[in-house]
Length: 242
Image 1 (cartoon, rainbow, N blue to C red):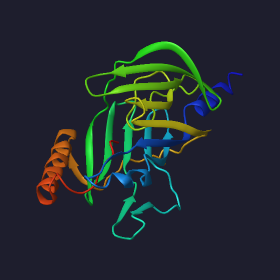
Image 2 (image 1 turned 45 degrees about the vertical axis):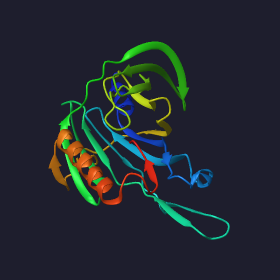
Image 3 (image 1 turned 180 degrees about the vertical axis):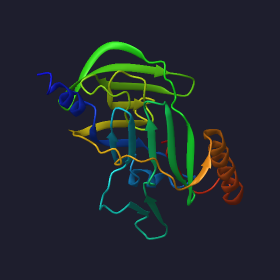
């Protein structure tokens, strides 16, 4: 028993988890185009993968042969056609659990950025509620601030303090996450506990190095440029908060 115990503990703290992200799409159509709203999907689903050990984790888009989803809208008389393309950027989030640091690779407007910083410390509240996700009994925890309302379901059966993206701070793996009442819902679809080699999880290195504050400023400035170029009163806006 003493000989097998270390192998059992190792098996519970390393592996690969597949998730499905469902992101709510907020569609803003210009005046006179309301009839096309029913032709636009109200959500987008993405396949994600989390490779983890007790010390580090990498959350990224799952490999898929599926082509990006296209949506074509138009009136029956052929007077107007609109084509929308939904393409998931290859963003990655590397977390050093033991050190409390993270590196996030973000693709924005055709450019790659590396955002470095500390893992956010959430002040979670445990509710005592339980829910089963796959074959794991999970406990409910909540966090709320001025802009976010998070509901996380974590399992102590996988004693690693991480989950989708940079979620951390709970005594177990987060297998389900709800942000802002359905704005984004992430649910584990499979769990494979296995030994992960030390070189299997690497932090992304390609991209311009910026802080979170610098990246946010870049986003705001670029969006302002686009609004000035194309105007805010025309065109179709698809808002995805991820």
